[in-house]
Each structure stands twice: as C-alpha cells, then as structure tokens.
Length: 260
Image (cartoon, rainbow, N blue to C red):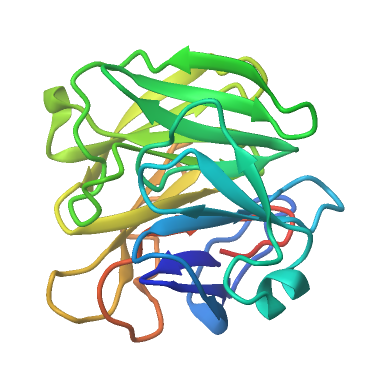
C-alpha cells in the first residue's frame, strides 16, 4: 500500500488478493513496510503502474507544481531527502492529494474556479488532455482530509474519480473515467459517508473507504461500494490498518503489484 502520512511513506500488503479475475476481496492487512520519512506533513506518492516501470513519484504538499521522480524504490530509499530525484515541473499546480501516475502519464487535479483533471505526458513533457469535471458545487471528498476535493484512483478496470458535491453532501460519489480521453463513462452516488473519512481506493470496481477519528486511533475500511452490485457492506470484512496516529493523507492501489 502506498501511503503518505506526516512525512512517512510505507507499503501495506492486504491478504485475500486473487484479483487477476477479480474473484476475491480484501480480508485483512497482512504486513506494513516503512520505506522512508520524507517531505512535508501532507502529500502523496505513486508508483507508475506501467508494466515494467519501477519509477516512483512524490507529490510533496497539497498545492505545488513540481513533482519528484525516482528511478526505483532503491534510489528512493537511499536518497538523502529528495536529492536523488529528478524534478518535473507541471504546467499548472495540483490541488489536494488525489493524484497518480498511470501508464507514463501524470493524472492530477487542478482547481481554480472549476475542478479540472489534467493528463500530463511525462515522456514528451506536454499536456496530453484535460477536462473540466462535469459535477458542480464540489465539497472536499473526505471529512478528515479537507484539502482533497477529488481523489483519482486506478485499478484493474482503469481510471476512477472519487468526489463529493453539495447536492449529495453527506456521501461520497464515484465516477468511471476513460483514461485516454478523460470522458466520464458512468457516475454513482454511494452510501459511504464523508464524515470521518480520510481516504479511499478502488479495486476491481469496488470502492473501499477508510475511516478514522480526530483522536488517535486505528484506521479501518468501514464502507464498501461495488459498482456491479455484487458486494455489500454486510459481505465485506472490517479491515483495520496497523496501529497509527493521525489520518492518512493518501492511499493508492497498484494493480500491477496488487499492493496498496
């Protein structure tokens, strides 16, 4: 599991993963591996999900325009701070912690008056596409991470947007996006509350929302929404993360490695 919490990045390995055919669900968190303490108190990091790519990207902060690229986990782990990274300046600033790198492209959220999803080609150093997200009157998607107005996720089925609006203010919404054109394919209103939510991820078309409290405690998956209607909250295990403090700033799933 790729996580950025106050200056700390680590991997988590869930159990009951047989997602080549999307037949299983998460039943528990098997292990945690702390990789590095780096950067500020909030941000995100993402491995490029391209097949064969081991590159790591750091989004340090919640309102910046430069990301940091490492060629491998090993370089990231042995780097003094960000010293071994290559800086990539984006054409506009990102907002929040909901970004990712997918198939040699950075997908990030830009917000001025409207919410815009930007697709940036790392190899050609150019904007491949951008799209204003069609939902209006956005509110922060997670109650415990108010900087994140939208969260992008990738799984075996492609690209997703996790968001919330004033029209359905108490609950989280989900949209399936075309990773090439950024068109919206379908949208859903879920039954997962925003209150005390800190992050979420999507695996095999199922949204897992992670909750916490403002007091020190354990994070846990407490709401599950399956776009195919095959899984309900009653079917899902109550998954706890290793004991920690505060709230996750970002959670990302890597379908190539089947790690969060």
